Image (cartoon, rainbow, N blue to C red; front, side, top):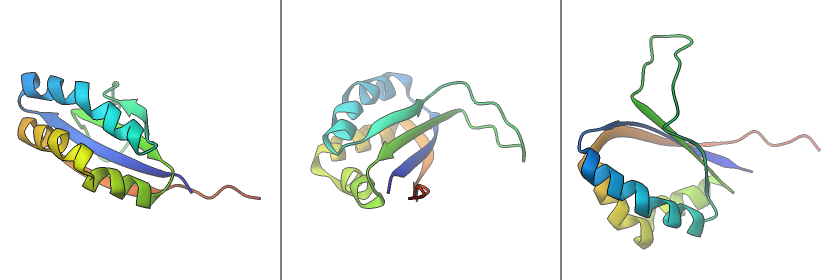
Length: 99
């Protein structure tokens, strides 16, 4: 079942964050992930939520997403992201398709 990593980000150091944006995609792809949304315009619909930036990644499973997040390949980019932004990240399992 697919899983989605959802990240709410506020960039605090654009220079370092731009470097992160260059190196992170290869680590995501290495674990079978892909971008669904990456910093596009956010429009609030309910609840007053107004994130600065949202990223949504799709992986084969929650386990694959967690393997990517904890991987040696992502350790360096993760540190760059954490240094250059504030944010929150979750992984959620997708809906199993009806058979």
